[in-house]
Amino acid sequence: MVKFPKLLGNRSPNRKMNKSNATSIRLLQWNILADGLGEDGFLATEFSPIFESADAESKSYAANDFMKMVREAKLADTASGMTSKFSKLKGEEKKLKKMKTSAEGYLELKESVAKLKEETNKSELVKLKNKFRNSPQLEKVDREILDWSKRFDRIKQIVLQADPDVITFQEIDHVQQFLVDKDFSAKYTCMVDSSKTYKPPNYTENKGNDDLSPDKYFQHILNSRAAFAPKSYSNAYLFRSKRDGKASDIDDDGCAIFWKKEILKPVELGFLRVPSDTEKSEAVLALTLQHLETDMTLNVITTHLPSGDEPKKELERLAVLNNPSARWTARRICFDDTSWKEVPYENNADFVGITSYVKYFAQRKDTQTIFALDANSRPSFPPIKAASSSSETNVWGTILRDTGLESIWVQSSYLKITGEPIYSQKPFVVSVNKMRGPSSNQPSKIGEHQLELIDHVFTNGTKSKIVTSVALNNKELVPTAPLLYKSKEGEAELNLYPSSNMPSDHLPVVVNISLLLRDIHTPC
Image 1 (cartoon, one colour):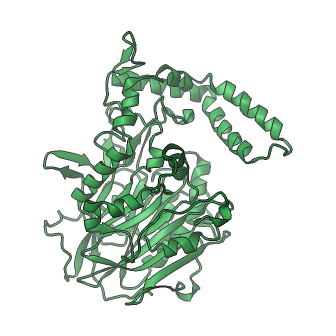
Image 2 (image 1 turned 45 degrees about the vertical axis):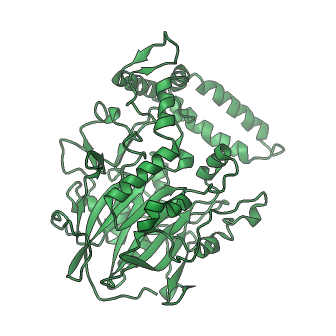
Image 3 (image 1 turned 60 degrees about the vertical axis):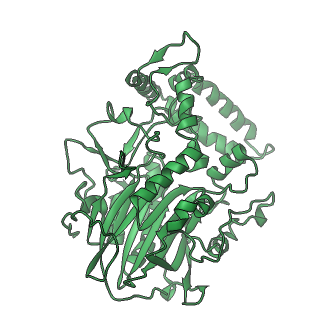
């Protein structure tokens, strides 16, 4: 039975940890929207009215009328089966790309793809896309909101003002930029060995020689000495390569952990590799930090689960949380007072998924654990029967059940343990509020309003208190997760992210977690 702590009071202005029986860690959890994935027609209505084109006689629409058009086009395509055709087209295009032209069935599949393209061109969303193809206001979104240089400056500003002790990022494809930035690097690092310099992976025409080829992936990420778990051969790398050519800082996106150098030091860095039957690799990232004043150790784990709102996508997520039939491998390096060395996990720990890896840290004696992630799954996702489960479940329930950790959303009284909202008047408790508009290259995603809570933090800390905003220059308040809405229509769809105020399609989660100080524990 999960016990619910009372709400933590306001954090003291003095944020230095001490040697009392309890202390507080401020965590910032944030999917920052990779540079390589950012320019995909994300819709913003702050530049209103919205014109069809720059032509002097072009028709214009108020923001709420424009959103109504997008919503109605989406509903029409769903009712006509057009959205299903988009999904089918995407799947068949992937198959065709992998097939050799001489393979059996190639011509038939090519013909099927051509037919589906012809059919989907009749989509109401595609018609809307064509109608607003040259809209100055939608082009302005790409130029003034989604441009990475603007987003990086804004992300950095928000993080520095939030002043977290630990940062967990997803979709970061500019690790090098954060590490060399004068202001950011003065306080934070993700390098466990300060003598090392981070370099993006080297990809060649011969994939066998690539730094992140399947047989080299583990050794490369361990040797990098960075608390960064990249997704090899990622779309973020591919899209940036096409846009930026051979720029030296092009990197894969992945998960990273940064920490405040003045108060914390790393003592263990580990990775759990997610099983894959393709050339692509990714891993769960685990970092153990020691507080320099108290010697308390803290385990921080982060990951990014597969996206998608269909039941089959929830099954994919459940399969990486717990899948005893797959081959899981984990490796780590530890600091022994003089250098970093690879040390096997105790008793040859047998991990069968992400939750077993998290549980391993949560059950360590004399340490505290934080598990922060973009789960791509809302707490209310309909339960489904997974292959490794005897009953129906979802991501939210599986993490709570298998790790023994508690959710900060429950501890801070936003959700019940069932995932239901506490405040029935505003049932939409959210960390994302986004929609792709007519300029997106993914027609099936145009008009899909994602208003949900998919960013999560779980802990065995005793209490947690959400920081509800970040003040910039004592004038501007930047919202943090969660925001609460009555419905998807109205206020929510007129305040979509990214925006000039919020540089990602996810809101940052900023939380003070109360931890119990315990005896010194040496992880390795």
